[in-house]
Image 1 (cartoon, rainbow, N blue to C red):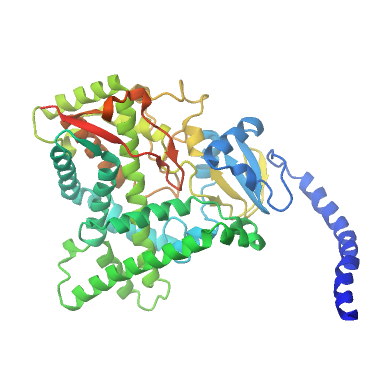
Image 2 (cartoon, rainbow, N blue to C red):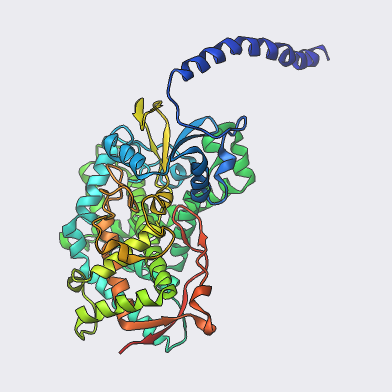
Length: 501
């Protein structure tokens, strides 16, 4: 009894003593903080800081906070300082002026678990390992030469899409589902050597992207990790990780078995998995390039190439249907360039400035990743006159920048014409348009994604007129989104397609 009372009394007695000891430390810490010029920051709650202010749609919540506290503001997610940037000028300082300083990625709980300890390109910490796997992926999959070599794959899958729509015979078509299938087939062929009609795998990819966009409380307040368990987040992550692991293991084993039988084909026939297995063999003594690295890179290619690409075409078609005059102008352009050919080719697209303007405007309003993948400062640095400590995370709100009324006239309106006499592009050199990020950690797959977007969109509007089912008016089209790492339409795009010729 005495022992138990002692255990109860000790914390009560020791807590005031500890508090008294901490007060001078806190005072000194606060004093040193005042010497630094810190960004404005909204008030924060004990323990969780500003986590509650992220809301259910973080890019919108952060834009609203920025309207009050400025385009460069500091949040505290638990004890983690997070600089939130919502201006093109500040984004340029992060991604260009101080590109090297901010080239690291913070270690985030869910991405780390789903990407085999952050062994993928997107979330790997900055360093030699990241440089090597990025170089491998760019050279063997994403270089201009390799992207051009996949032209027949893109054209074949586009023809298949057109044929599927034709077979609908004027009935309602789930265009969203067919676009996901198209992009998944393109990625499957170049990464795995075959197309995939595996609906289960597509479901895995959707769940993967959704979970990557979920804020884990345990990432920012480790001792509150039980909240993630209570939300079912841990269970969902573990289940998905196991299912993805089984899928990738089967793919790798299939490739290894073919190679043992001498059926690996020549170098030109090698897909990404073959190439990664070759690299692994060459680096047998390098323990960092193991089976998990292969799975992480393949996962990156699928998640980055499927959902982001299909959602961009889906949003573009939705906006064109909502704006019949824009659709008509685009159809006129592609028809004039095609000159009666049965299909638009990639050579034709170079003469379609309005098509390119439509895609730029789509990416401005519907940026695939509204909050770019977070960066982390590797050293103390000054940004826009504010002093940031090493370890500060940075979140760039590309969605808010793309809708900034100080940059864009009629910022909320879909007006592709704004890009006809405007050299702003999305390749990472214009910070008012950042759908693929910029700098060292910018997306290396820009050309791969854009080549699919342009070809598919050009052929869809060339071959068909589109209407909404059941006499629905275009202004009634549901444009609400489903938030994850990638923002997709909440409701699938259901259309009735009528052949134009």
